[in-house]
Length: 301
Length: 326
Image (cartoon, rainbow over all chains, first blue to last red; front, side, top):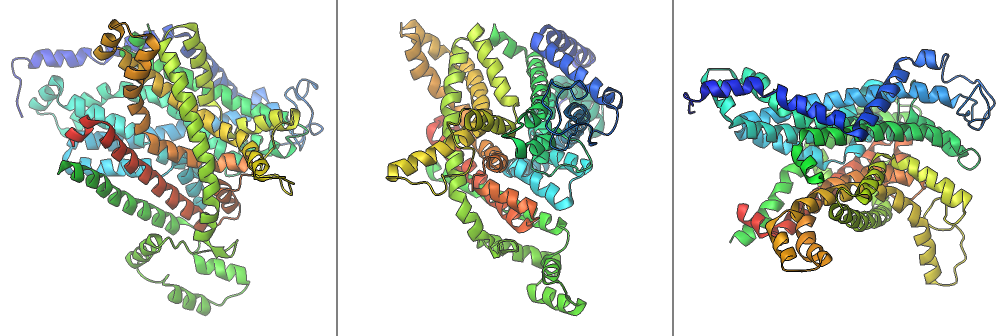
C-alpha cells in the first residue's frame, strides 16, 4: 500500500468536488433531452393518478357497475368501456397503476440493494470472495429469469410481497456486475488510496469514498429495471399468477382474452396502459444513460 | 498446448454452474408446500399416519437433508424428474415431447430477430443523427416496451379475427385436408408467423440497439478511416470492415437472450396455444404440478449454460485476442 503523500491534499479536494459536478451536469443533460422530459411528465401523471386512485375512480374497481362489454367512448359512466363482468375498465386502469408502480419500484429497490451489496463486496475485497460471488452472479444469469420468477411465485403463493421479492431476486445480477466493475476501477484511484492512507476503515471506504462515485451508472439502469419489473409483473398476472386481491393490468389483459373476438377493447385498454408506462420509463432510462455517459452523446452528434 | 487448454477451461467452467443450478432447484423443492406423500394421500382420499410414515421411509423422504440432496442430484444427472401427478406420466418424457416445438419457435424467432435487428442497427448507425435514425429509434424503443402477450393478442385480433389471413393459434389446422406434404408444411408455417413475430419483437429491439452502438464504435476506428480513404464505397466499408467487428458484442449475451426467450415462450405459447414447453409450464402452473415446473427450470438453465459455453468457444475461435488473454 503506497501513500501518495505529496498529492494527498489535492486528491482529497478532488473527492469533495467530485460527486456534485457530474451529477449536476447529468441533471442538466437530462432536462435537455426532450424524450426524457416527456417520459418524466408521463410518469409523474401516472404516479399522481395512482396515489389519488380512490378519488379519481371512487369505489371498488372490482365491482359491477355497468352492462358487460360496453365499448369505449359510448357511455359517460364507463369512459373506457366495461369488461365481461361489467367492471369499469377506467377504474381498473387507475387502480392497476398502483400495483404496477409499487411492485416495479419495490422490486427494483430489492434488486439494487442486493446487487450493490454483492457487487461492492466482490469488487472491493477481490480474491476468494470475488471468485465465489462472480460464480453466484453467473449462476443467476444462467437460470432464465422469468421461468425462475414463475416457479418461485407458484411455490410460495402469489402475494404482492412474494411477487416483489421474486422479481427482485432475478434482477440483481446486472447491478452486481456493474457495481463490481466500478469498485474495481475506482479502488485503484488516487482519492481512494488517499483515504486508505488516512486510515479509513473498509466500511467507510466502501460507503463514503467509492459508492457515491460508483452510483451514476447504477442510477441510469434503475429506470430500465423498473420497466422490466413492471413487464414481468404484468406477464405473471396475465398467466393468473398475480396477487388475486389486487387489480393488475396484466390480469385485466388476461381476463379479456376470452372475449377477444367480440370485445377486444377489454384486453387492449389495460395493455395500452402498460405500454405507456414502460415506454415512458425507457425514455427516461435512455435520457439518464446519455446524461451520465457523455461519450454516448458525443457519438450522437 | 493453449489451443487445447482454453476450450477445456470453458467446459470446466460449466461444472460449478450446473451444480449450482441443481442446488437451486433442490432448495425450491424444499420450499414447496407438502411432499410427494402428502400429494399421494390427498389423491387417494384417505391415508393413516402410519401408512404415510411408511411411504416416506420407502421413498427416502425421512433421510437427512444432505442425503436427499444427493438423491436429487443423482436423479437430475439421469434426467429423472419423477412422475407427473396430473398427466400420470414420467416428467422427462412429457418435457421431451414438447421440447422440439419450442425449439422450432425459438429458433425462428431468434433468426428473425438477428437478421432484422442487425440490419436495422447497422442502418441506424450509418445514418446516426438523421431523421431515419430517430424514427427507427422510436420504433425500436416501442418494440422494447411492449409486453409480448399483449402484442400477441392484438395481432390475433388484427390478422386472425379482422383480416382472417392467419390462424389464431395452435400448431396445425385440426382435421386439415392436405393434398401433399407441401400443403402441410405451408399450414405449419402459417401457424408459426404470429407467435414467431410476437416473440421476436423484443429481441429485434435488443439486437438493433446493441448493433447500433457497437457499429458506431467500430466506425470511429482507424482501419475504417483507412478503408474509406482508399476510396472504397461506403457499403463495402461497412460490409467488409465494420460488420464483422461490430458483430462480436452481439454474440456475447446470446446465453442470456436464450434464457429470456425461454421465459417469453411461457407467455407466447399460452397466448397462441402453441404445444411447447412454455404451454406445458402454464398447464403445470394451473395444476400446481411443481415437478414439471422444476424440470423445465432445470432444463432451460442447462440450455442457457451450454449456449454460454458454445459462445465462449466460438469467440475463442473467432477472436485471436481473447485466445491470448486467457
